[in-house]
Image 1: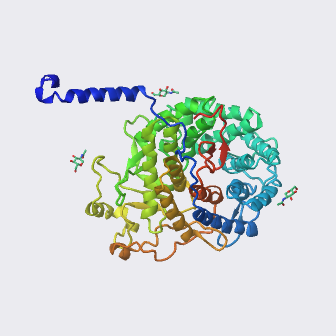
Image 2 (image 1 turned 60 degrees about the horizontal axis):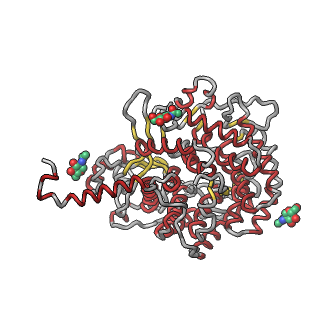
Image 3 (image 1 turned 90 degrees about the vertical axis):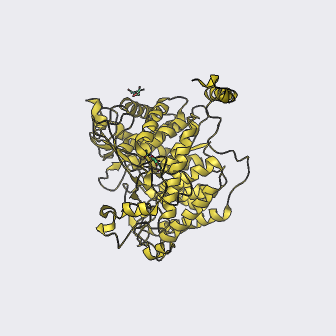
Length: 565
Ligand SMILES: *[C@@H]1O[C@H](CO)[C@@H](O)[C@H](O)[C@H]1NC(C)=O
Ligand SMILES: *[C@@H]1O[C@H](CO)[C@@H](O)[C@H](O)[C@H]1NC(C)=O
Ligand SMILES: *[C@@H]1O[C@H](CO)[C@@H](O)[C@H](O)[C@H]1NC(C)=O
């Protein structure tokens, strides 16, 4: 019996016709009406000066510590006031912080820092130093380039070229793929492509070197970028999850048996080892997508598999009716049809919220915006539900086994989390993590930026003040626990002050401060404090429509004629 012959259902006809027209329009209309990444703020001035000043005060506290105790070292030890060398001794913290000094209007400090930077000799380093290509590219090259872009100080350009050329020698190999850890400064060294390389070490060099060509007019850097991206496109289906690249890859395989490139590992993730290899597909398209379509096609293929294999809904309380998704870790043996999903997530993977949200506008896929929002919600949840108010480095969640029904139940949680493998040292009575955290394998906080990065992007894309409110709470928690005599210190545990009695009485009491470690990475200045500052600044400052931020939060200017969106 068809519906058209049933008198009772005749009223459905016009409705169905309307629906058909609606569907047709959906297909015919361009899928996205956005012409910019940022929300249209209509030129309203929306800075929150008190909060901005609070961020700046903290920045100055740590910067003064660096100036007084570790000037021109790679890093400051924030508890002892000592100095550390980490990346060949080219003053990583100094170079990484330059553009934040400009953005925060700290002009005197910037002039001092710039003069000091100009004395760095990138052709000399602490003895026998193996150059970490990835860290040197994102921190030193990215930092120096953004300082040049924002200051327009012509004295920076020769330094930028000196550094760019030195790093570019990492690609002077038999197959044009880089040595990711080589003593680049040694004479007559035969530089070979790395055998086993970290995915992100090779797959996140596009943005910096492409922009270097745009700035200098010298094409040799962009030719390298083109070559590396072509290789990544060619091997994209070779791994055990076609479309994704595994955590470990083999640059040395190119020129030999190509398929070995993507067969060194069968693990796939968005966090450590992988992260910016995916982020840079979106961002490099933004930088030069009118002239290169390889990044868009790689992203479209990869993002489909990320959604299929790496993301999961978690069983958590207090999600405040929000959609919450976390990135996990997938493994699949060659020849297997099933992939295994480990529901362990990392602070490092929180950048994916901002990545999906930006990709949704750039590539016109509205669904990706909700994925980005849900991933950001997950990171905010972890901040709000940890005893310190800070998300731990790595933890495991229970996945929702039923996608329609994932309602929290205390008794179900008790059953699951009381299983010995989920309790601290097998002892379920003594110590339990807050509900939702099944296991916390690394409870530390290393002053990382990825969560506030995504919160910042959500604010700039939606104009919803909610994001500035949650961001402010994150800032207060982080400062409360990390502030130290000379700067801000990484935390040994975001979890250990958890007070079970208080929790059972329905209170989350902050008993004592978390224990600190004598470490402060340069990204605290380059990224974490910059994102906090920009969250509370007027949205015009470093607008996402004029700048693309590298994975160390260094802004590079977009050029109208070549940018992809
Ligand atoms: C930086 O160096 C320039 C050139 O040597 C000098 O004129 C200027 O005074 C210096 N600025 C600071 C803040 O030291
Ligand atoms: C990879 O697989 C996809 C989907 O099957 C296909 O569209 C694409 O052309 C393949 N790419 C390469 C480089 O073989
Ligand atoms: C999901 O949960 C609902 C409500 O408990 C139940 O009716 C449904 O059958 C479940 N679906 C699956 C696939 O288990």
